[in-house]
Length: 473
Image 1 (cartoon, one colour):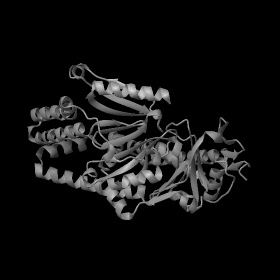
Image 2 (cartoon, helix red, strand yellow; image 1 turned 90 degrees about the vertical axis):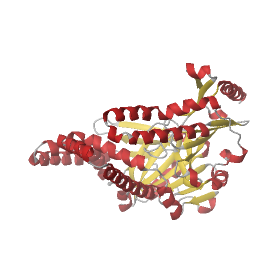
Image 3 (cartoon, helix red, strand yellow; image 1 turned 60 degrees about the horizontal axis):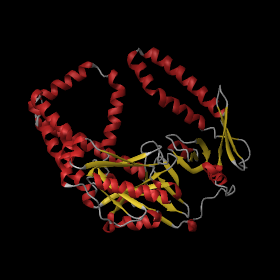
Image 4 (cartoon, rainbow, N blue to C red; image 1 turned 120 degrees about the vertical axis):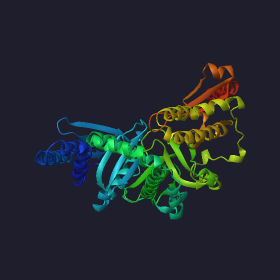
């Protein structure tokens, strides 16, 4: 019975130890490099003993139980804490299974409330899958049944195919994510890399031929691209979305299986993202902004509803899964920036590369062609920024479109807009231009969308209409 005091599965001790290892990994690495092997072994032994004691005590002092109104959690080694989460505040209950969880047939339960924030309101690191289902049903006031929702109760279901998943990886543009991980790793290890390595690398770059450098860069990017494809396959493998009357259920992941719960009434906005690889092919992914909770983990503020859809499939998908947010591209008449705004887009996208080109030409003329090529590409990107920017207002909804590298289209109900902003500097005012922004609630507290260099009078008209309609509601 869920009303009885329960502990986590003993495997939670392993997760507590692994968390300690993760937190102190780089400290141990520094000890290994900075001291002799004997000191490292002593430090490692002491750390292992302390981490094991901490893992056991954290598990032993963690317990939970459910009453008619609340979930109660007790935890703490030196300072005991007892806290409750009211059932009526719970927005979603997500289940996550890592490789270790699967070995023991367990799952992690993550409970989100309307308060939002980067961290979950509560997390049970290791419970049996049947107990997790029973807890989820008990917290939703549906009894303590330990069975999943019958298949026939789903109003819609869609699963990604392997060919579509592979195309998702190929066109993901995940180079930036993988490179980001590499940069973070190198920054952590920076002090451990001998100075001679930097000197040798610099001398080699100066003396190497341009063709060889280009080939090496292409090879590195190709390897990173393959890694990004593999990362996408692992993260979104077996992606399935299902809808009931009031909720969406998303399951994804090969190594770490996640089951996300999204209450439909908490969706604040729906977006369509097209990167520079997918847009020419007519593909995009659909995301949602959720008020409260960290429903998609730490890697993203937005929750992906489906990793890859062709544009002709988007309207049918929205009708099936989020019908309140369905719309057709052909029905939209975008309010676009005027021609006078084009120079602002060019300058904003290319100024950095122009300065870099001048600096490299002065100090390293051999490599001046690299920032010059990037400068020319940035001008093209500035044109795309200008071409894609705009908004469209209906009786109750607002659509925004803008681009950084990726083109983003966002649909939000006017009643969901928390704030509307307008700003312009002296040069914009001289040309009758201004930039607008809207803010909505999201899982990270707030989400902001900007469209730049529109006609100021049209932004003022839009602001007046939104303010008027919001008051009526």
